[in-house]
Image (cartoon, rainbow, N blue to C red; front, side):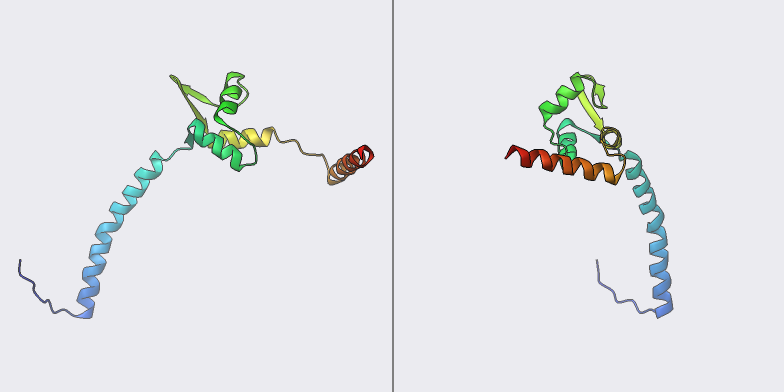
Length: 121
């Protein structure tokens, strides 16, 4: 193949580049849509344990299997495989988080705890 030099005007070059980009953009959009459709929030046991630990809930595989056995955590079974949903785990954390009714209640509990600890010294 022989290298050739093409002489063109600025406007013609802009048109050529614009046409090439216009031809590629729909293909990229289709590629992106296909990949977004495949994306899921499903997690393996290992990924769920890491996710929960990152949320401040220490979890191991054994902990999760124990919770699954007790049916105490949202999960799905596919044959022998256990799968967790990130969205459902986030909701489970929210549902099981205990919060005081008001800031005053929280302050009173902290003060009471501090009093108990100082009396024990």
